[in-house]
Amino acid sequence: MKINRVFALIYYDILVFSRAKWRVMEMFYFPITTVIMWGLFSAYMRSFAVEAGLIVLVLNIFWNFASVAQSNTNMQIMDDSWSGSIKQMLISGIRESEYIFARIISTTVISVALLGILLSMSLHMFDLRVIFEKPAVSSMLFLSTLIASVAMSILIAAFIITAGKEYGFLSWTVLQIFILLSAPFYPVSVFPDWLQSITTVMPYTATFENARALAANNAIDNGLLARGLLISILYLALSLPVYFYAFKRARKTGYLVKLGS
Amino acid sequence: MNAIEVNNVSKKFKVSGKEFYALKNVSLDVKQNEILGLLGPNGSGKTTLTNIIIGLLIADEGNVKLLGKDVEKFPDITEKIGLVSTDARFHWALSVNDVFSFFGMVYGLDRKERKKRADELMNFFGLESLVNRRVDALSTGEKMRLSFAKALMNNPKILLLDEPTLGLDPSISIKLRKEIKNINKEFGTPMLLTSHYMREVQQLANRVAFIYKGRIMDTRKVKGLDLEKYFLKMVKTNED
Image 1 (tube, rainbow over the protein chains, first blue to last red):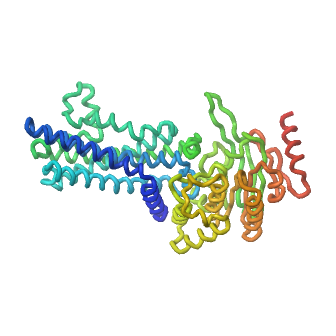
Image 2: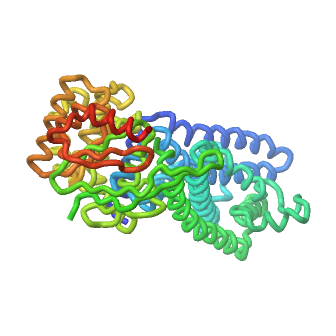
Image 3: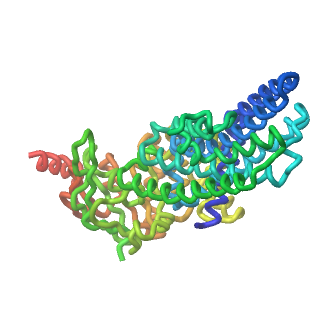
């Protein structure tokens, strides 16, 4: 891996992000408005059930953070594909490892910036203190979410590279089913028995469960915290060989050429 | 050592469940200092071969060596290639200057070198007045000039020219052909040229290879050859 090429790609992302204003809107506008909406809902809910409102708000922050940390990388890949610039990049010597690594770095910066905005907004507008009371635990939960989303973005990229750019829509849609099965606003027990075994291995289940406990009772399960982190790391470890295999396969099938044309 | 060496390359694709050979046992070489023209009708395998040479596609059989190194085993070797292609596209939101800055960084040039090289190339290709213009506001000819300039950013050791003057004004085409010849003469940069303009191939290439239905049918020196007649004869012979 050559560091100048990684820096060049990060520089490229900054250029595109600053020139294409819709990218800024896409990454910040929707999450911010969603969290404001659910923040207002949680404020209203305080007269009925404080915890319910808090759970909805906290989990919305996690959901939006997870989505942006995944979708930004995949949207960048699709943007490179639609604009045809991916071909110019690859024939200039940029390796697949440099390509994805740089995108993960820029996505991490964007999603952490978004998280900062969402948290500070929630603190000042909706008095959401619970996340700030246990900063180490909250950081661990967000770290697990970030790693899981990075892994998901790599897996989705691998699928699009292998199956073709007509599957680009998965960039902003497919995470929804993983979020649903990771039980964000409800416990795993709401699912039928046969589905529960699947939900336990979903990338965000343990993290969401802990986030709910934190919002509801200011409590945390350390075992669950470790499990959440471990599952995220396992997803990441799985995603990388899948991605490299997908690239190699796409070079054989000709899909890599199609991705850039 | 040849600049480009294609050894018994075959490539099959599947379309609607049916396999066909896009390339079959293709062998050719581009020697140091020479320009090899690659001629063939549409769908003859020119683009597939180019994609294999630049490492975007892996051959089913055979191998490609650039400057003596196998492209599959040493993918970094593609950094030394410049590709000028009709379908060269850059992100629509970037400016001409952004394109130079980005690829200059990719090629490891420092800020000063990047600026110097970009200025030289913009000056040569008449892009100075377009420096801040976005790619999506450039005409076809201007995009082609940008593609050519980008391909020369890294002082490539090999140039692949895929229809390099398609869509360009005659005056720029003439200037570009002169420059192609100059680069080849001055730096000895070997080139593989695919073009539909026989005059262009006649003017630039030292040798020509004729590709038809994924096979190299003939390779010969250009000097003394009437390329138009040769092309028509080759197509007719192979169709028969």
